[in-house]
Image (tube, rainbow over all chains, first blue to last red):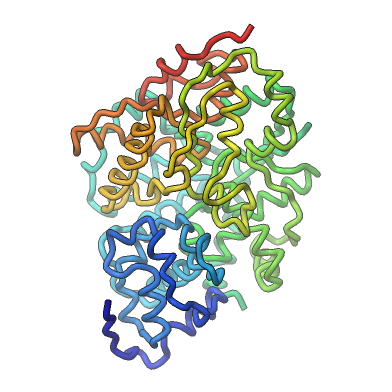
Length: 189
Length: 291
């Protein structure tokens, strides 16, 4: 397969920014493609993980942030487990997600950031997840009211979702963690 | 034997059956689970996908509580297990991260708390032989596909749970219960749960379909799981699979602790069997007294 690449349009290429966030050096990748072969979702995306790495090595810029793998990746960690060079691709994907949000890049279909935000919001408020509020917030945010509603009767009948939030967590400490990490803006150093 | 028990958020919602069956099994075996007072969410996948420091801090806050109790942590949920272990790894290996976590929580944490999955407690601490002696009922040759999913076994450098490609812990438990543990290729495949609510939920249905289809192909009579996300997916998504492909699997998906509870003679109610969507009746019927 031929990969056509245009030099990063942003001056400073993404490779260094990913290294700054994740501490991962992608230069050691020699394109054996074990990550892409084992990847749970590679058959369903345009660019599998090894291609993303190659593009980064060749100096890709912010245009890479629209890659559909970034939000289709399920964090199953198979790529990391099988990499002969021990590249922690999971952290690389997390760094790419953080960069998408920071740079307000276009997010392809999937709405994962919206789900993540709704999830973390309930944790920030209650200290633990509150599925009902999470799902309501997410459904309102995505206007996907009807998705999976066919399962609602069985979920209710089997009591598979808590109706009330749990109040047992040390909420003060959790709020402090959110406040402090927000100030830190994802930086490690 | 005494542990600090970290239930995880799903123990209070979608996986109350995993929670109650684990507590019941521990009690029956005389293992003390002391719930960590004031525990909070580990951050899960949205945590690490959003901010690495946030993820490590949310998990470490719970590890500090266990450290204060002076006990090892026992966890049921594969995702919590993975995140807590990752937090340990982060603060141990990155001094910068340890500093950031200390700043976020307001207390220092050195990554020293031992984190164990329920299966590790049972196999390594309690022991396979003692377990065999404790079982009063047998799976009676029931054909079980052990499904580990992702987060227990990967990445091995961090979870250090078992062989990442062909783990045996759950299989050993099945064998100890007198079941036939099946050799099958999808035990560490991903069910895609993290996309469940997103617009790519089509992928989740197709992944679950291939996993359950493979279990069916090796003539499994049920699938055993240890992760609440896998359980809900494989159990509840059989409705979608039927709707979209016409395939009706009727494959019971039980927590390993529910199977163990049955072999210890515990009641269906304690084990939360009524919460399963696909009826576990064929499994319950196969279990016989081993007198």
